[in-house]
Image (cartoon, rainbow, N blue to C red):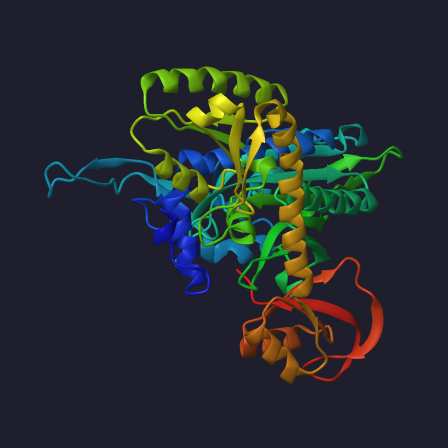
Length: 492
């Protein structure tokens, strides 16, 4: 299985595409630009979803659900947001089909069933949510309003890649309303920190927390906070965003509240989201030429047990032992799968679980039964060891933490070694082509310079880091004064 994968060094893009399909994560669908997420891929997404949902609720948020269709008049209400997504919108214009009189057995759009007003298939939900909030918010007692929804969105894409960029994708989107600007900014920063914590503690991906430049901001936002990750091919990937929306949407939808002082005021807003794009980040940060490498905290099966036997008696004896092992491991909250399929030989099972990134594999054969041992293999290091059965549970439990930590450290070392300080545009271009990664360089703060650098190199300003050191310098491209370095990179 893994032997058929193109190597990362040979063709990183092809390696990624093959891995997603061969590891049974997702596949292209009959609908152009859309994907089918297969059970194993969806199991990983469910674990992401569960942890994020827990973190959202721990910070006081509640889940709700809003319509997928947005009347065009509502969508147009906040002009910058509407303009920003206009080219990506799918639109419903009719509400009925009918038999086609010219083609028996076929259907056509009923020309008499045209909608009075077109419906936009949501690319994002600010419009429908803020039109709803107008009825929910009357007084300061109704604030803060902290709502999240798990949903699908549609953003029309012509060039798609599984998980990274598809016309329809799954995500969560938080939408909150606050009495003061300060509270809203604190909320936007809090949720960006939640995303960073999730990426680092569960995905084992180090991220840079920062603020987007004006040209890279979410349409309709005053400020966009983000977390940026670095993939093995030296390209950046935006892993999450959190937006301070100011009062733009409150004014567009006339959402006011009566303050404690009895005054009518517009609320302050945020929105924030992550999507199934995180699956792409997970794959490209840790995986190797043999297949997926999953951090234990997100692996659907943290451990797989494979029996090796020749007779039915041996199989029954191994299965009895496996059941006891499973019981002990599950008591420690470790997810285990017993691969007792008779349709595959042990070698084929090993290859599949290696391809699918199961963190720990345990093999039990007749000799292990005699010796009271098992063979334990780690996916991250591809090492094997024989251990005493008595030590199995404590060893595996310790390995879960060790593998999680090791994957994070490996990714962090790679990321840190690929942040390069440059002071000339010649070095900028050289590093970008030869090494890649993040380039830390001075920028004069103008959109013109940002656009020119992008045109010349395809690199964009990924973020202005939250921990940016304010220092006087000169712009890497124009030589004009600069007050600090920003991070550039080519990106997905």
